[in-house]
Image: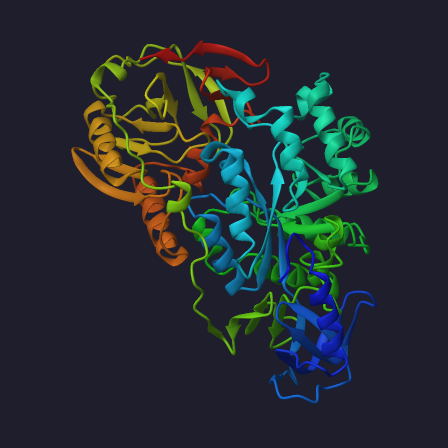
Length: 577
């Protein structure tokens, strides 16, 4: 069994004996036309698998009896790799992994930020070990900053813990680096963490939207390896010329991939070796038809050479993370993550192997057991032993948050009387409250552009796990809070004293406990209701999540209070309850 990316010596000896004919492989893919990443050609061979490892690729067939799948007329490619997953966007990491694998994405490189908020370090490392039991290959990155303003940041982001995270064998990357302005302003502790990651052979992922050539150059000098924030072909080329590895994004809030590929091809790009693709934490409905299979399909349709499209979602990812001896190709010694296709230009597999286990066989999805015991880690429905009262719904701040789009927010001067019980429907603004998950503090203001007339939204889903309330009517807010407590966490919509939609998040108030299919239906219902009540953008889940995100302009509501992002000033501090 693979442990910390290695097999034991006696297992390695046994693998050799399989090739020698002394043991039978567990599976053979016969007459497979497969994409060989090292010569970039389609070759025909018999692929032997023993347990979770590819043992042999060549003309021979084993003498012993074993399961043999004739792949004549089929095409075989490596399992797809998602290099930049955020596995806590209402779904939980296990649900995302099993859903992704059904569509051929058998490796995920995941954000660790939610583990920092949910678990202490010892438990986080333990649950990451449990994730290694999945047939899907699960890796993680180590955040350098919380992406928001925290009252207790030092307890989560300190050198001792950071070095332990970076040393963990399942952690293969540092970043993503949303706090790069502080790095450029002289944060030597952050620079030390980055250099420790580089010394361990782990790349640094940037988060550099709109960065100039000079800024990109400075960050390259300080150790940033890659960036996924390009929004145009020219952005991509600028990064490539400076030596960056570049992720092309196709996400629910930034589906840039088709346009970016068109611009790259028009510019004459012929070398795709430093390019990958990512869905960058799409919300559930965005994943209805899969993850990287969708990206590959778009690339092929836009005219990227077929072989390069597959490489961008497999071999290029593995090389970037120094995993190409394990993943990203079909060759002896690699993990048996394999997709079987009907046609070269059809990346939606009819057969999927992950660590040698069938995830999809002859078009039929295989039932997988649950590998993660959430109860073991005390990740369970929220139990709140305090209450929200009418006194918490006192609004007097003169500055509110004005939504420009799903995630960009500007300040505005509040001119409406916000001391009333219910805001007028003709005004495009609502009460906004950020409430400490332990009930110790609150931040009260208004938000414009989220809803025209909804009574209340209550959410335990947020960047930090604190509670968010948006709505026109204080009594509806109180009712939404009551129902949120009954559910043990989630998102609740109330209007005129009636609960009109709810999405339970029984895993720590942040993650759904059911299947992805169930979650997609519930998220679509929630989105539809919010649009019915005047939400005018595309992705309300991200709008809720990023209310506190200080890596985005221009103003945010945080644990410290209402913050001017550019100046890093707290305009109006949080109020103790």
